Length: 369
Image (cartoon, rainbow, N blue to C red; front, side, top):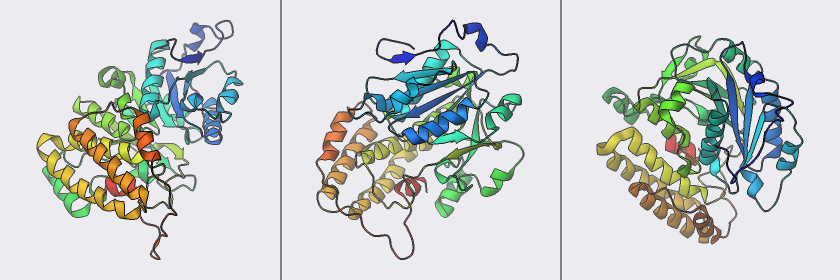
């Protein structure tokens, strides 16, 4: 997928001819990392990947198109490992577009047996890639790793799940128990064999060639939020099997949500979160249940406005209205600049204090319930 629109540095053929990528240790394996203005996190991730037995490592630098360079591009340019493929799109593609670009680039260059995807603040645990490559779990088209935070706790935002609407029994359990009814349990993280799932995150998700050929690329129009859930559901709808293997471990050093309240920072993220969740509900619940599910969620989302003050409350409601309008219509083409301009019309107030009972759940955690 190399084009003039993407600035790409590739290994010197004289130093690393194409035949050198062949390996007598099946399967061939590559990684895609999408980054945007988080140089410290990216460095830790790249160091972990360079230490792993990967044939290629594709890094999509969405921050390279910004007005204020953060040093990422210069640091990446100084790396000379022949396995690296560096892509700098002319505009920020978001996580969804970045993963789509990186996957397409690797398929065009090498079409490896497996490609593992991750954010810039996530990385494989020592030995995880080697373990997978030595013995990929048999019978699965995609495999999700067990993701934990740096303290060793299960990363809730990356906890795999089953489609709560896939059966009447599971749907009824979800109505009673909420999120725990369709997400994997802590005990599943201790199993010695993979567990079949319907939903995985783009942190430590291994995609086979068959999964990529049949499932295609993530929908780049989503920009951020929900691209991994929708892609997982799409693969399952095609009959592809996704397994959760707790023996393969990843770390996710995601600090942006810790201790946050019902507030989106930056505010423009509220648009994508709500718009894309409507796409998730449509894909998971189907045509007949989509309406009732969306109405229940809309009421909950509207109540979140009370957590904003002054001009931000009005802007949040405008972003929410726009997200619902676009989400219901399935319109995913609104320019990012338009969303940014709307969000910029608000002045950030002092955030509200957490209650004495402890920090409230995040917006993302509530929507997963």
